[in-house]
Every structure is written in C-alpha cells, then in structure tokens.
Length: 552
Image 1 (cartoon, rainbow, N blue to C red):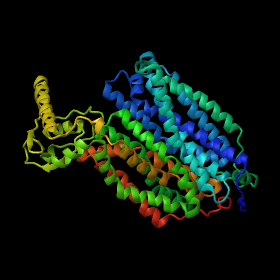
Image 2 (spheres, rainbow, N blue to C red):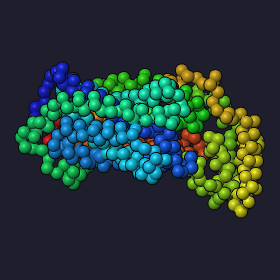
Image 3 (spheres, helix red, strand yellow):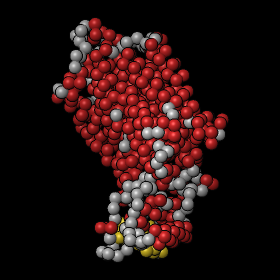
Image 4 (tube, one colour):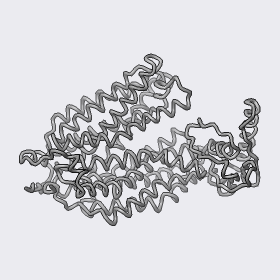
C-alpha cells in the first residue's frame, strides 16, 4: 500500500526536527574530528614508549581505524534503523559517539597505565567510527522522511553542512583553549578539555533527540506491519536492491568522497607540505574558504529540487576532473611564487638505475634507505622538491641534476656508522646549496603569499564539494524503499567516504612519493571522480520526483 506524500510546507514542529537532527550531527562530527586535529599530541600521550616518528604512525593508524569501521557501523545501525525505527537508532549512535569522546578526555596516558592506554584508545576510536557509520544514514533518512514533497534537497542539504560545521567547531574550541592556557599546558593536559567539553554537547543532543517524533514514513509502515524482518539480506541479498547499492557507490558516493576530501583536507596538506606555507596561515586560509562556501551546500540542495540531483553532482565531478591540475598549479603560484619560478627555470631530475629504486612511500621519514637512488629521492622528498625520473646506466650511482648542477648520490650499505653519517651530511648540504642557488625556497615567503587569490581558489574547491555533497543525501534516500532505506544508503555512503575518501591523503601521498611530482597525487581523485562521472551519467537515474512514501 502506497503512502501519500504530504504536499504542503513544513510545520514549525517539523522545522524543529530538521534543526535538531542537523545540530546533533554537527556534534558527532565535532567529536570525530577532535582526534584527527590532535593526533600528534595524542600520539605523545598514548604511544610515548615509541620513537617520535612511530608515535605519529600509530596515532594516525588509530585515526584511520575510525574510517575503516564506518561501513560496519552502517550495517549494524542501518539494520536496527530499518527494524526498530530511525529515532531510537540514531539516539544510540550519538550516545556511543559522545561517551567515547568523553572517555578519551579521561583516559590515563601510557605513562600511567602502560600498554592498556593505546589499546583502549584504539577501541574508543573504533566505537566512534561505528557510531558515525550509523549516524549519517539515520539523520539523512529521518530528515528526508519529514520533508515535504519537492523540498527534500533543500532540507537534507542542512545535514550536508554538518561535517564542515563540526570540523570548524573542533578547530575553534581547540584554538580557544590553546590561546587561553598556552601551548605548553595544552600539550601537557589542556588537550583533554575539548574532549571533556563534548559531554555538554552530548547532553544537549540527547535532550533534543528525545523530544523528536519518529518519522511519518516509518510510523505508517510499522502500523501497517510492513517493516523489514531482515534488512541486510533484503538490501544485499536481492539483486534488484544490490545493483542499486553498487550504483550508489560507484556512480555517486565514490566520486563525491574524493572531491570532498580533496577540497577540504588534501588541499591543506598540499599547502603546508608541498608549498611550505606556514601551518597557521594555511589553516586560516582553508577556514575562510569553508566559511564562504558553506552556504552553497544549501544553495545546491535547493537547486536540486528544481533541476534534479544528478546534473549537479555530475557537474561537480566533471569540473574536478578538468580543473584540479590547473587549480593546484595556480595555488603554487599564489602561495609560493618563488617555488613556481624555480620549478619552471631549474627542473630537478633524478637519473638512476631503476633496479636501485624502491617504493618511496615514507610519510613519517622512518624508512632507512641504503641505495643511491633511494637516498637521492628521500632527500628531495624531505625538502618537498618535485623531480623527474630518468633512466641511468646499470651499476652507476644515482645523480641529481638541479638546473645545470649535478650532484652524485652515494650508497650507504656497508659503510661504518660514522662514515655513513658524514656522507649523509655532505650530500644533504650539497643538495640544499644547489637548491638554494637554483631559487628553491626553504619555505613560502609570507610577504609574497597572495592571500586573496588563495582564498578564491580554495573557495572554488569547496564549492565543488558543495555541488557533489549538497544534493546527495536526498538522492540516496530516494534511491531505496522505506523498508530498507537506512541500511541500503548507509553502506555505499560510508564505503565511499570512509574508504575511497578517507584513504585519499595516504594514497595521493604514495603516488607523489613514487613519481616525484607533487601534482601527481591528484590523479587519484581525478580517476575516481571520472569513474563516477561515467557510471553516474550512464546508469544512475534521476530521483527528484520519486515519491519516497510510495517507494516500497
């Protein structure tokens, strides 16, 4: 039996539900991003038995655990949401997220309880990832099922602003605490305050969510006895539904995710790592672009109610594919013009026997290289210098050519420790001197940073994020029937965003390290966005006119 969609404006009570749902999701993202922002400090607190580089590795692995388990949270809580209701399920998710975050603020360090500290920390991160895996699908479904026909894009787009708002909220709280108590105190104990403050946000969120009503679509379906008894098998065990899940992943969320992470995360790494912009300035520039562009989530969500979800999402992917390389090249010229000039005038070329060159993925600098090729590339990577590769004669040591200067590398295998150290110092100094003569800057000159142009370029990248992300919640909701909606949309969303998107920085960094070109990391989001553009254009159907009350 079909459920008739209410063709009327939202009532004040329904608007309150939309606001409350979005607010709670902001708090969940705040909790989730706190860890990532404070990963280095947390590594010092909970992995102090390790050397500094290894601390960073393990703290980032703990952060990644939250992304990896998100699809499993989508399965667990999606099933519950389709069986017992949206309201109570994502009330549970916010309790798990909030309490896990609060406990991190209380958790004793490695120095107090030993190895139990990092084990508990990783377990709490996994709980956070599970909770977030259940939160988004619940919020998107709940809001869409409360929205009047013809305005789902507009109302669900508010959910799409919450990840950005949560990130900004975490940055503001951390910056505020750091400013008040000082950097030394913050690194010692003050880092706990943002985690502990989350208990207040949790209390507000739980209070608001307890006052909500169940969604009308689910209430009607439950009253008629049509709820799914096995949403997992129904969603993924029946081809008619599974093929839509696969299309939602490949033709929508994978491309959306890489555009989102490129525009809001990878670009920040690019500014600080490759372009050597001061960290505080880079964060402020990205924050400014987020503030300017955030309203476009709602603009594109509302526009999707008029012209369709698919054209906007596909346009965002298309623009990412064709403009990422020129935009990032323009970022280089605006952020570090001296670097751009040096790259144009004095290219760096590594000539080496290919058999000597190993996979250069060393984001923490802990790998020990012994061949002349690896040593040469490691030194250039440590200086964030892009280079080209050329084939060298077998058995000959690798060389670095910087403009007209050629520097011969060395092999450290078999050398005594003192001799290896001396060679290392000499080689690094020769390389640094040659780079300096060729005009390669040690860091971006703040006086030459074109802040206005950078904010414009960064805002453009975030607008691409709003194009692919603003309408997608409504589209995912409209693709699946009410009885399995929570389960079905959550999995492709969190595989797309947790895996394709969450692993983007590491994957892009690996490509850059392997090829030597600082722009080549962009091939990962470009290829994935192109895949989504092709599959989405050819096979994903427009959904804006779907009656979600009858979609069973």
